[in-house]
Length: 475
Image (cartoon, rainbow, N blue to C red; front, side, top):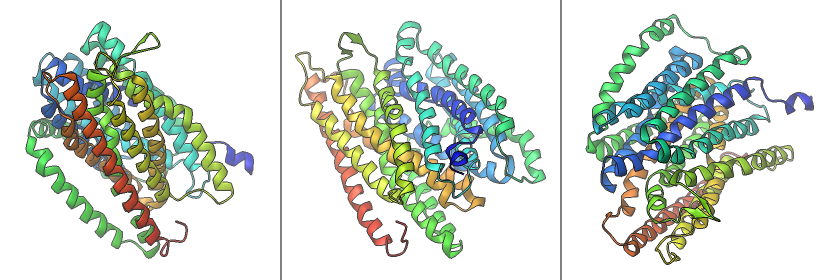
């Protein structure tokens, strides 16, 4: 029995590498996007922050729809296939964009592709494990390592961009998705299919490209409207919150309690992602402008820094997976909420480190890269306590018929975190004409405020879980 439980499903390595290549493409784009807009198109920090935030919001909100369609009509496998195709097209559009005119259609296509792909490969992995399988958290942590291998590979995009330009770099993102889909189809025979889909789903599968094109046209315009970030998406967030409350109340008493915990995790994750995604927005610009790009004689690029966070994932991920397994055997595994409290607190520590680093520039006004690497180390600990645990919690706490949709809502929360990230990133907006000392002061204040936000949310969540202990003993 122990040998059986020690082995993971045969589908895991195929899903692992499919997701790795998908994440490679996505993070090439996300890691370079704000730099592309400020350097290539000459946009201001405020304008770039807004576009990056709205893109992050929509790219993570779209999985709500993709998860729903996969649950009810398309199935996880079909959604992954079509999502991959649209991601390939979106990255290709970005690769051939010679003006800002093509930027928005490219981002809109990526949003649609991500919406179909991202929630459903995680949901598909969840169906490969029994609900009470003790390997579940470890399996999702291993899967998360695959995600971060893709991010590490994307970190080399800075060198490629320096050597060959923006467009060749974005073309490589498209090629990565091609490789990912080939791997996915080569492993189909090992992937269990537990879904029973209606006949309508077959018809929708053939019509899906048309509906996706219509969505791309609409998203193209939404990305250009600044009021989307200021009003429309926050209002949508309130509507979604009401929907979650109603959905929870409609469930049986047992599932109602589980969904209550899941909803708390989802809401608190918004703040974490708003902070974490700064590594692609305000912290990314900070690194590009004010961090020394040489370490022990080795030349670095801006993209190496965000990729370093994934190196830490690979180093720490197996340790965390082993720890959850060991603690689980002795019934000492912390609850998901306790892991979230510590994860958000660690994000605050990371920004304290970044803020402190601005106080010690060298003679050229540049901050040592070691400060950034140390800060991202703490952010990594936070991520390992939030993201894989959150993915696992969705598949564990959501009713079987709602797993895909709740996985979509999990990524919607990340999307609202991205939208909030774009808003709060403006605290660190600076003028290119400002002197280094002024820029450092602005970033110091911004990072310190981010840390305060993390600490306040962690304290609130800690007291919330104390109150829930009376209702749910397993907390």
